[in-house]
Length: 222
Image (cartoon, rainbow, N blue to C red; front, side, top):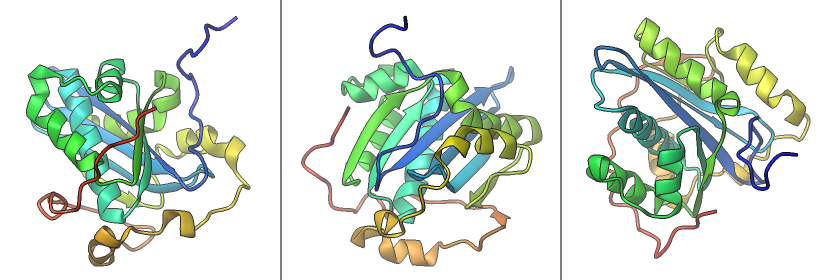
């Protein structure tokens, strides 16, 4: 019998009117790092995905945090308001769940935490590698092929089998546009950064405009 509250080994959809962000990273021998993330709806539909290669990360935890930061920036720019952040990095998830600053990435940690306060709700979830394989594959192709891509509504062909298999059991629940409507603070930026469907483009999102968003008094953690 599996232990009570055991980490999930498979991807599961978020609740109705929430979106789930899965992020991952891979670090090469020379410090070159691949970042990957995927944002999906409660029906399992891919809303946004990304892969990016960066020059350096001092540790795997730092790399995972940078993947998380990028995903949060994109989620805010797209106007998503109710978010579940999921990772296979137990160190990162536990730190954010219990608000314990990771000293070796303090600035990065606090930056992510501050941005997360802009969401209406934000929770953290740990998942085993098997449940994080779409984000893992996106990070892998970034590291191996130096791909910098932001994919609006789809994932690259090489990642499609993983995305389809992880969400196939959740098909047919429909897609509620109202639940994914942009928040007022981000609507203007969303309109200016909307991407054509079916195209991968290079994007450099600055967070300076996001830091001026009104902050909430607290943040919901599961």
